[in-house]
Length: 304
Ligand code: ADE
Image (cartoon, rainbow, N blue to C red; front, side):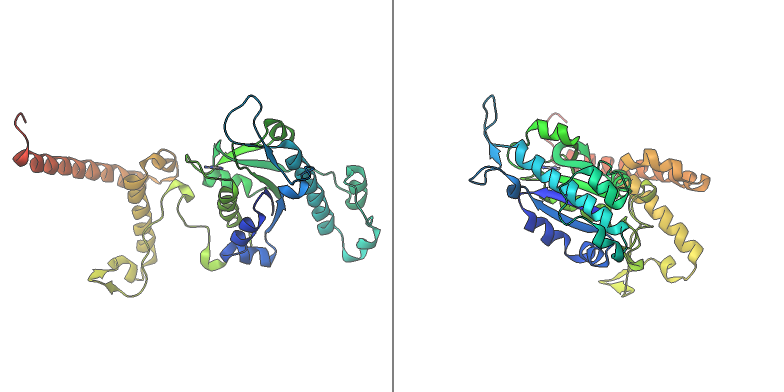
């Protein structure tokens, strides 16, 4: 899978993704990340990529021209990459020396129509990125990401690229680079060959819409706290059951909003467990409320 990031801070993106597991995935060839510096494509002799908004207002808007030309370079690169991956080494000599980006010429070289890649524009106004969205995007071969800055991007270039706005959460960052890096990290680990066996993506938070069960490692006792006995038993069925129940309980306590979808994946026994758990949690909450009231009354001002 190939990521093409259009940015004013290519070094920031590349340093980030070339580290840790994504860096290893890049070295292994499971993913590639190329950063395109938008400033390299401006026709402005001072290297400007932004200007004041028409109609007035504060801040600067990223101009359409540098982004559009940068996007053309990305499309050309995608096509080159496709052709390179389809050619055997012996075929290379047939390729034209200098490719002017004409799709007909490219089709003649590698025999495939250049499909339009999905273009994502990092913006707090976009569809919120979550695990399901990551799984959807991980099926793409190429993803183009535009990192915005300033007060936004000229709307016309977003329309021309048919860009989808994507947000990583309801807060505003100074630019789209961190969101792009977050998304690349999350999507990459779903691409075969990025995670090793040891970091398997199979059993984890949000799979089945459940939160992950608690984990423990050596020693058995730490600061008087013991590892749950079942995990030392060697009884795999009991361990699996305990972990599943822990996942259900944690989801109910920490992220009850996930349960609406999660219940569809639960067995009859697990649904019964959930019903009992809900009663227990409701009773605990009642007890906590009663305790709080009791604490308030002794020192309460007159009138209570
Ligand atoms: N750019 C600024 N804030 C953002 C956010 N929350 N998500 C995506 N892109 C952004």
